[in-house]
Amino acid sequence: MANRRARFCAWCNSPLIYMPQDRLPAFRRYCDDTCARQAWLLARARQLMTGIKALDVAVRLLRRSRKPTVQAAGFTLADLRRDLVDRCADERVVRIAAFHSKLPRAA
Image 1 (cartoon, one colour):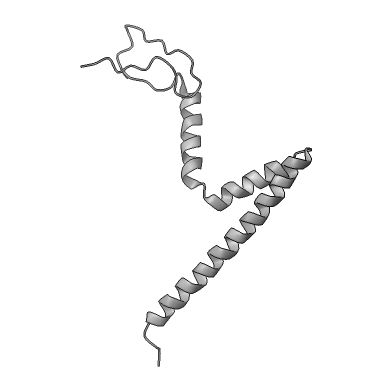
Image 2 (image 1 turned 90 degrees about the vertical axis):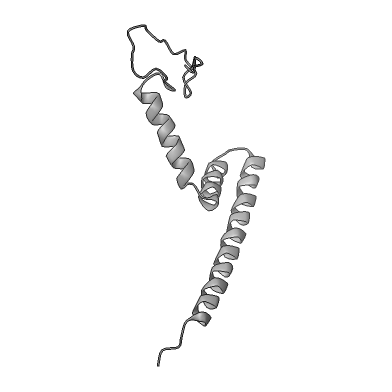
């Protein structure tokens, strides 16, 4: 069996030290619980992140900038987000109308 032990922490990139008395686990990804929790929180946030939510975060951060070009990028992204939300709402209305047309009429 090949040596699968990681040499560095997957989160903070600090070296992992394996001692001979360390029986379990033979393979670690993180140096401690703090790094493991931070990696778990990032993975969870990435799963819950949608495109609209990511644009909201980016717009909020860009609008706080003092540089005019960065603020302009924030406003442009805000316009793009608004167009995207409108398009999603239009598509949702079309899907709902198609669904309702397939339902039997109530007497």
